[in-house]
Length: 173
Image (cartoon, rainbow, N blue to C red):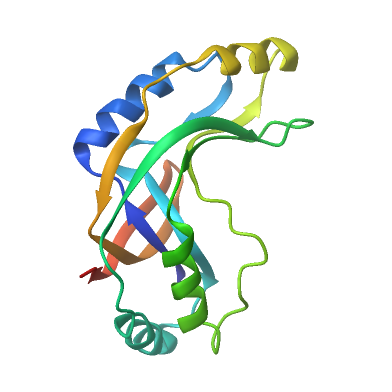
């Protein structure tokens, strides 16, 4: 099964993100469905069912305080060939590092964590320069949220896109 560790985005914050998605310039691709909005802390990839219990056990060992974060900027991967439009969430690096360390006996540590929330996947755009100019013009107030937990999730790929299922929820103190 494909698995990952993530922070889900609360409903009231999703409403604000939908407004930002609506302001995006025209693109061929797909905007992230609101129920799928999340910040991936660690992508685990294909995991054997038999290893899930060990992963759950390691993640349960994490003792981390709940914390405030905010969505503060809009960006793209990669300027030469735009494939992802994302929002930056600050203040998530310490939790990500803790998860990375706990799972290091099982998974390679992240080389470079970039705290981002994918809001659209791009297949193609008519004019890259116009697209980038329009992206730069999108302005929004910082969106604050409190992170109270993180989740181990399963990702099922379907014809209609990814479907996510919570395998375990880990409350922060």
